[in-house]
Length: 282
View 1 (cartoon, rainbow, N blue to C red):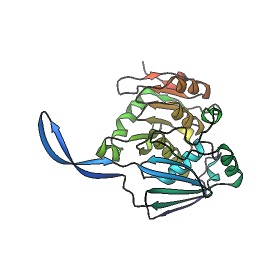
View 2 (tube, helix red, strand yellow; view 1 turned 60 degrees about the horizontal axis):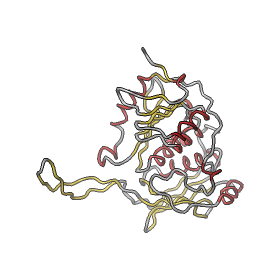
View 3 (tube, helix red, strand yellow; view 1 turned 135 degrees about the horizontal axis):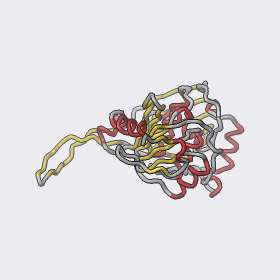
């Protein structure tokens, strides 16, 4: 997978959907009632349309959709290289947002052969898959000499809290952050869907010419199979999640050469696969 900044056309037209809104709520604390203004995260239907043909509609936070288009296209195997995303046009529609994506005709024909899934829930991580073979894809084993000090994960977990702008207001969105050892957090993306946040992060790295394998990822969610799959397909060698992994996620991480860390907290973590990448100062 190439890491150079892809040369693509990106056009946003009339994007007017907010990522959150402010509403009056009835709040109760210790038996006392008050009427207050609260911030609520939005989830908006986002239709991904490839070469004029609808593929999937995701429920997502309406931010960083160019990053999402690239990250989703790559981690779902729709394209094999960032440069194959030729153009992105984003339109505001009456009931949501439409992302028009142009890819090479050969890639589009492969996508058409797979069929399509026109609805994707907020947590959808297997969107567009219509067969078991399409759903359970095993990436090529990750090749990276990355090593991470456990203290760097703890530091990143502390730092990410201050970089979750939407979550600070609403308390209801996930985040994915890319961290370079001895440097810190380089990029953060948020979304109501954990898979969307990771796709946005991966897309952001590729759009700006970053080499994903130079860093590791932390996510403020559980480590499901799809999260490991997306991490591996982008060439990242370590995924740390604040919650638990699934058994399938552990097996895939082992096969794909990904160091999988779960229950990552400032005072604890559990290493499930490939512990050689993680250094502990004991």
